[in-house]
Length: 89
Image (cartoon, rainbow, N blue to C red):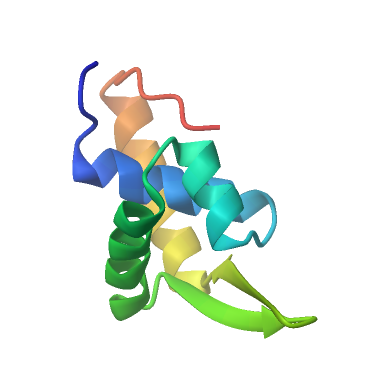
């Protein structure tokens, strides 16, 4: 199986969170990532303030921030302009 570049995984996380907030288990499953590996990617995105973690009804969820939306939109525009085939949504 071919490995995805980290950048693609970061953008996949942002794309998933654009639809709605999600918990870490659902995100790791949707991304087909080991749970601990997902947490590493999420920690990086949190450190850049592209996503944030909240507690809702005693469950941890992730949400995309305004900065994360902006980064995703710029990346998506770049991807489309160059005809890259990584359809994330």
